[in-house]
Length: 225
Image 1 (cartoon, helix red, strand yellow):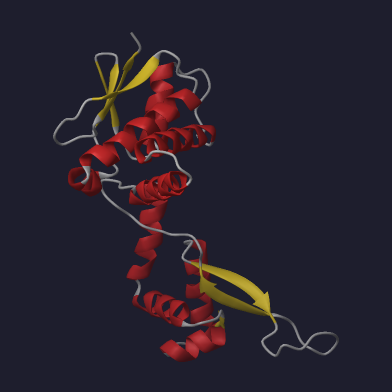
Image 2 (cartoon, rainbow, N blue to C red; image 1 turned 90 degrees about the horizontal axis):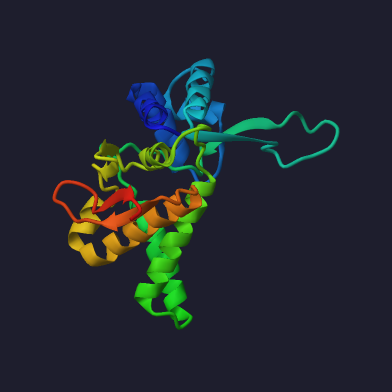
């Protein structure tokens, strides 16, 4: 989901009725029907149905069909359409932050370290591997040169790459506050991740260089020597 879609999803909660329905649904221990939701917020059932379905379209709620009576077979009636919180996470951050990725990498590194691998080596390996996996899922337009391929992939993950003298300067650090507080650890993971991404994209003539700089990412992508 790109930033426009995420912003649109969050923006759908600006409507007071829609927000009230969302808050009611997510506060319940189980999926709920539109009649119960309508009663809870004091609106007609047809209005509740409209807003609940809009929340589903926005990716904020999910649906399932189930007979609330628990009965089955002939005469049990049709299953009811029920609403519940979606399992997906929808968030908007400007500039984009990826603290979830850092947490994932550190958790993997801790698991590897528990198997006897040195923590620094474990972090380098899992971050590089994650870069490879990320590259495999990137949809890059055919026919692009290496620098353009790398720029497209990095832009899609919040790095805001800018072309400068046949290099890519990464204007945004997706791990900003963590990188400032735990610079050595986070920047090492970031460097390995970008390196893995380049390898996964087949950018044989590009390398990730650690070049710390105030106000931007610590990694710069340059032509290989």
